[in-house]
Length: 188
Image (cartoon, rainbow, N blue to C red; front, side, top):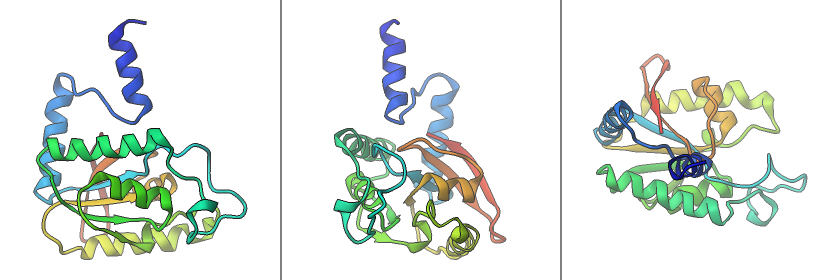
């Protein structure tokens, strides 16, 4: 494997992509749409080893949860730096109450983090999927803030809202119509 392929594999493993050719122009357009407040960024929390949470999970106690590891914390900071390089130094940042999401959101370094229950995982409570996704759609259609909006959530929530699965740290840039329809513009 040559050096280029190793770098591409490493970036993919931490949820980053290489901005090459037409992709660089596409990414610039996505960042501009986010900067202008025309697109919302929803992202999956950064790397947190494992799947789901332990049986003794308590959302108010980080020691009982699956949390970011060293690579996940580094990934969060790197993603925050990508925002700044793209000209976004601050944003309205909302997160799931889960510690791995809140820590990801905080390490982005884009501003204060507000917990939004509609972003909370329903991985072990699938019966909440429809109502919670509808709550998130309603919240997004009523969002009236200026500038960039960043949401940090879980793969199951993002898939329920957009129909797309995401890797750890992957960002989807999307628009929400007044009727709640989601248009995904792209992913980084």
